[in-house]
Length: 247
Image (tube, rainbow, N blue to C red; front, side):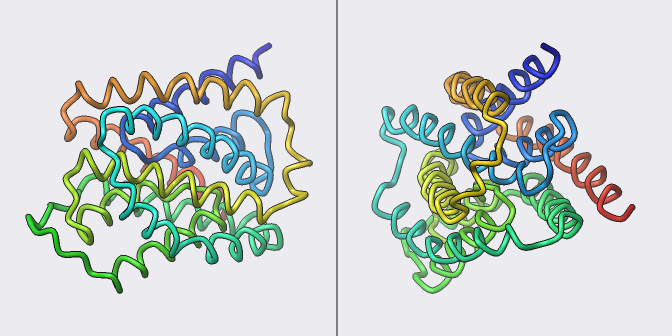
């Protein structure tokens, strides 16, 4: 029962985060699965891909109803990451657990810095295809390797590289996150069979429900407040996981 309650609570936090920020679901999901629910890093990243895929699709639908998603630009951005996501997804199953944990800690720290220092729209509609493709490919590789959707990097990239307004960047990042996550999950193939679905099922269900509330919450709270709170959580996660990796 305690395990079920932990799965529901952690899943709800993942959904709230993805719904509000268009990012950060896996940054919470992976540590929760490892430290609260006893998953190995490989199992946690695989389960995270499933949870993030379902949750981001739910949040994407909620944002699409308001017309905030930039479909064409988002699909082009996501397309650049499909092959890197697949290749990295296969590679992740062959890497040591300590290396995955340390890499995840580093990514969480980078995400915290990004949240504290968000990019500013340039005020132009010009798109830089080379930079956009490079950013999309990098996000795809990150998704496949660490089981993260990459939304915490996608949002600043969509703002800084494609000059999106923040609201459109948050909504469109969910398209990128869901696409990359599904491809990376498919690349892992049989690894999904080792996941404890009795735990992941309730976790995913709570995350999906939380995504709807997160979308509404994100529209009400000041962006700066949400970013600072989330950055603090990320830095804490990064420190705990780095210490664990170095032991």
